[in-house]
Image 1 (cartoon, rainbow, N blue to C red):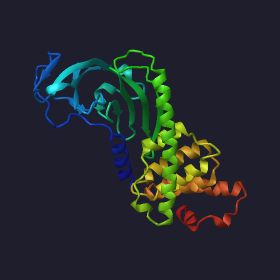
Image 2: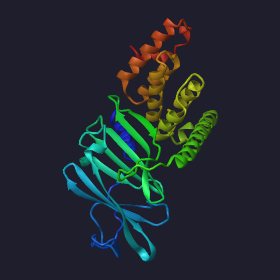
Image 3: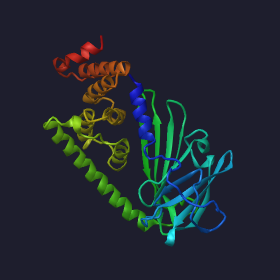
Image 4: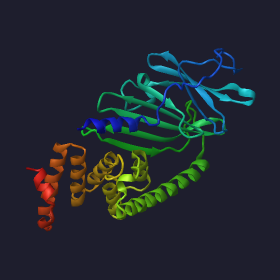
Amino acid sequence: MIKPILFLTVMTQFVFCKQADNNHIKNDNLSNKEVENHQPLKDTVRGDFNKDHKIDYLQILDKSPEEKQIIIFLQGENNKFSESKSFIISNDDFTEVEDPVNHLFISSGKPGEIIVMASCCGNFKTTETYYYKFIKDNWYLSKTSISTVDDDFIPKIKVDMNNLSSSIDNKTVDNKDIYQKEIKELKESSLSNFSKSLALLKSASKTNTLSKQNTVGLETVAEWLYFNPINENNINDYNDIAYYDSYTKDGNTTALFLLKEIIEKYPNRVVAWLNIGDSYWTADNKEKAKEAYLKYIELMKSQKKDISKIPQRVYDRTK
């Protein structure tokens, strides 16, 4: 039963995406720079875009078959909305997704954040996401995420942290000092989160409560891999996280994503092949599980390890 995994994967990819909010925004006189009492608009997204604890909105307009115009309205005093920024999103703004403008999603993210995303097509979709952070009077690219669903329906996610120099309306500004401060804080937070998550999972394993724990999110793991790449010093910790996480609520997809990253970096790591075989088996992907188990047996023999320690289930599942 691969379909449930695909559903979870697609839901994960779209967790940050939302189209027009059902809450009403007022007035249709969009030609005014400052208007109040707006009527509901068709393609709008709401959120606190400039981190002032007020709900703003942006409007999405069709410019051409390959372009969208985005207009940001910020809420000021007395419920008045002022047009803050107008810019164009085109197919050329994306590098990985096919026909991105016709598969465009915009959401509000965290306070002070605008997320621009395109996702296409079919079961093995690619999702390209850009995170813009509000600084002073504009929004600057802070993070890029590319997610591609493999033939096993598990996404491969690559995260990059950007230097806050490129604005949402294609201007370039030197925000070096702000970036250096924020990237330092983000790295410290990510490393701390990594250690805390490992400790929590180990504790839950000892008390047999892993099934009650929430899974570590795919995007969180992708950020760990950015700030703390897999190496000889941390590979045991990453393997433990993948192993424990496979037993948490809905954790098998994250476990498979992480185990695939481990095997890509260290293809001869024996225990990772056993763990990924078990996770594929849990996901009801028997073909991939059998391939992993056979690789595990091969490595156990070639590395002259004690083959009596090979679990019986491995032999049973490779018949």
